Length: 468
Image 1 (cartoon, rainbow, N blue to C red):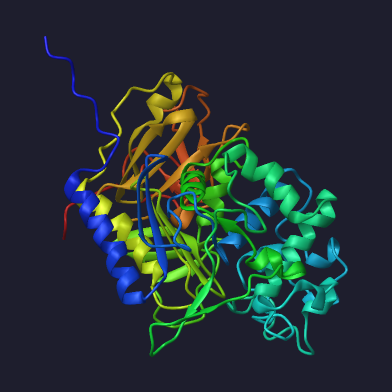
Image 2 (cartoon, helix red, strand yellow):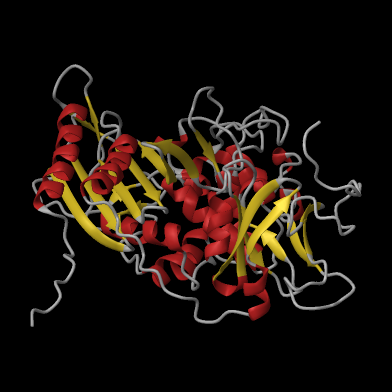
């Protein structure tokens, strides 16, 4: 008897070549001294590739690059951990926790989503190329006009905003933000090659002359108070672990439901026409008919990008040591696309629920909002999913709550409460006791416009009739 064939842990040869060619084209056309790419599949580092060299040393997935604004996602994770512990609320004005009058009335959620109205950059000189000693205190990062827009009015990317969030973490944890990050995020996720300052082997940052193939070294300073906006160094291998975390969560670091909250759009971008947005510390974009989450980053001498598709279980990472040139955001997104097109993900095997409440099973099946048919299905952990049967209407997934209600997770009903309302008979869900669903005051009945008194406004007593 032939043993079943095991799935390969590596991409097929044609896939490997397509992935390698994508980063090769980016490195050549972008004129980058070096470029590293990686693909994550189902939580594992599936492929890595390199082009160029780093000081004539061997280049691999463990070579450190500066990752710029990807740092912001790590700071956001720390802030959400504080929220989940009850040490702050996203609606809190920052002034409740920090004495920073320059931030005005901006809330923590607005700082996370770049809707605080704060200036885009710190007080000069160019903070990314100058040491943090020039801005020793938090107030020193602001110029004469720290607020450029009313808080909450529009999306306006703000590096000082994330400097304030790093200071918030330090205040509530009583330790430097990078120490908190190492202890609470990096160590649990096994990201030993991610740090605030470079550790060998690491790439040197270069500027490439626009009209000649010559290089100029870029400074790699410790930016001090501004560090939470873009200080971190990391590797393709470490960012692969981080991408898996952003897609699936890790209870040791952050609940998957909190990560889903961070990935939901919180603000539209400032540029008209973008098919993109911003969540709570996480960028969103739509490419190739899929929604990608992650972030891009740049610092003098470095470019970085991480884009992940939770639906596909795929993520792409691209790192380069050039101030400008290769479009690493497009590279990371293309790595996801190539992997998905060459080797489409296998669907998860269907398995029956490990347990199911008979009353909830009886609740499943067709329901009607007026004349519009919907289907209610039972999901794991007593979850429910409601979706229109004819493609017209609003659907959502619902999380079970301890009080016997459900909370919407997405779409129009996100955050809304679903209740099962029983009639006087008091029987089980779905029994003959005039049960109906109340979803944010919308009533769903077992029959179209069921004449049982549950439909607001009542139902004509003569019922359905033929046309005149």
